[in-house]
Length: 110
Image (cartoon, rainbow, N blue to C red; front, side, top):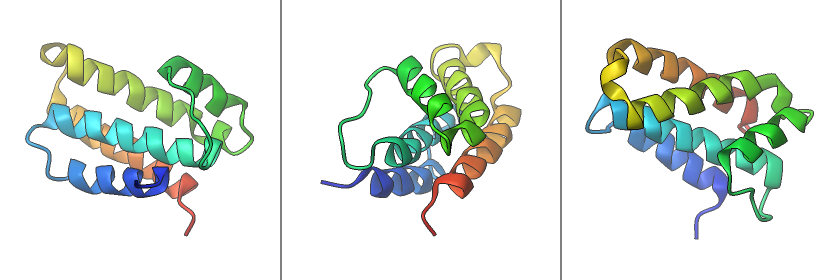
């Protein structure tokens, strides 16, 4: 079974080849969820609710730095998945790209 870090890296790479902008954004969010989970929980059990994960990120010394980017990406992912017609996905994709890169830059071990 892949570690959170391995899964995050794989999802980020797969998102580059997503069949649509909406799914690219959703995949990027889940990549961010797993890389921040790697920082917060290591190999231990994770929180299963997105809101609680966001709160845990804000409470963590290292996580506070990227909590806003994570929350913006989470909200964008929900919009892409559930309300794509309400948002210009082309411009939202470049925003999501910037958010996920900032999160990975902060959370990656290398």
